[in-house]
Length: 275
Image 1 (tube, rainbow, N blue to C red):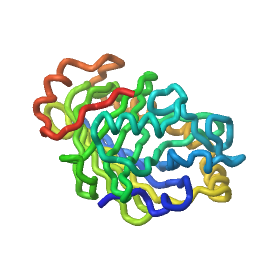
Image 2 (cartoon, rainbow, N blue to C red):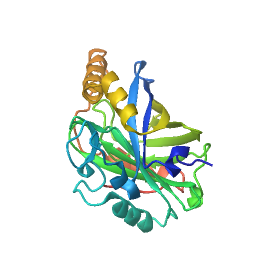
Image 3 (cartoon, one colour):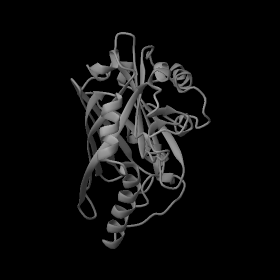
Image 4 (spheres, rainbow, N blue to C red):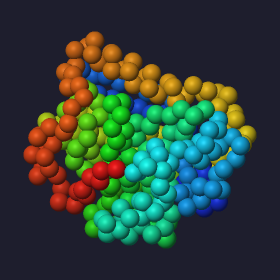
């Protein structure tokens, strides 16, 4: 059974470090991996995370801005997500943890943030993938297991793709998510299948530690430009794909193929939820 890292029962926030890997299988093989830096916060205890070095909706060396997530209007995130869960009839009445790339010195870019929604027994019941693209748009995918069962390490979560992310991929096909947790280690794998077959593989492998001042300051000293590096690396890899003549779709609305492909998905696939 998959639950949040053990530190969730004590500190209100954790720092997660590790690697992100991305692999494209066709029409050319393209692979890279980079360091990853995330924070995970209990949305019911955000006030407990406030320190001079970690701020909520204010400038700080490290922090979060509520307008970066969910409805993007600054309203309390826990209440907003609980309404989404109730609408989807998902029995996630326990803790909700937001795992995201934090703002560093006021700046952030989050390709995807993850909301882990648990029941009162601590079991993971829903995963919300909060996606943002480089064109300034955002979208959310709310995923749950068949029959709203607890999400275990071997649970496969599937949703159709309805949001344009990469200019080198059309808006068609579906995603397959897997969440695995062991002790303080957490991994999230995302496979993207277009209308033909598996096209992209992405994997986050992270180690969680309770977030405190010394750890935050050491991390900032080691990676002061970590967030800037995210957007630089995205554009660098896009340039490499363009030079290799991978088909370029640009910024556009979802294609008709996305709706047509829905019928091929398993019957338990949850609906995507616009944020």
